[in-house]
Length: 397
Image: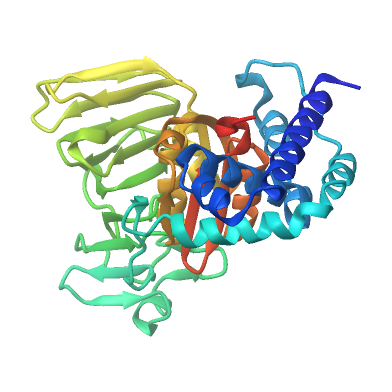
């Protein structure tokens, strides 16, 4: 018998002892016991353990650790794999205390009535919005068009299925630099192909302003939010992207730029070379592949080598986190799927995880992967995700 199984059976034995002692109490003694906070929390932990054992959906969850190792094994230090608990054996052990199950469930019902955390006392990480989720194009004169509008479909190449819009060979006036702005809501990203062949992936909750046709000796666009750029090489015309107080200048390369706020302005280079600077050009630096430049509060560039996947995998359709807090992970999940996120346990906010999920898949798939990590227990009720510390983290046993 391995150590993990021994620990599990020890937990079950202690649970049985506790329930046996409860069975012998009279009503007054039971009330006194229930008034003890530590005892109530212990029973809650038992309930969590019971639910993990008997929920079929949990036992069928994907192994998130294996998925991460398979996808990104080169970047994560290998560690000894622990054998997963033999769920059938645990189930049989729990069945052995069935004689007191009625009393157990009765007490849990009392606790749920008396100690359920109210929504006001939960820690809210993200609140869902009612804003319509639709990608739109805003023309230079302020007109707002959906991708289904004839004015867009008749002049541009629209691929709604793959969420892509191309300006190559667009039917527009070549003599005037007409500007368009693509706006993506939360939970939606979109790909643009500009008239020079440059590919731009625009992340959710972003605005990209660009000319329908590049005219002159520079190609200039502006981003508010986040974009991944695969710039078509043109030695005669520099490609310049601006946003907030920064400017990136290239001839042809691949990089990610993020500037949702002035305090989170970052440029990450994947291929080629890029010169990054403040708009007034007083602070500038040249990046090589694998470097990230973060504009610090003092107006200087903080440049360091990074795992570029952390900054760029979103454009491939992934939620990707390397040693991030669960609070950060859950906020991103809430934003993408537009669901409320609440924590019942403040200690769980700072747990760190490595996590990978396909954000094109349903929310339920992502939650199964999270539960598979066994760091927290995540459940969905209506349009709210509730996160609480797992048994492994907060067990009394």
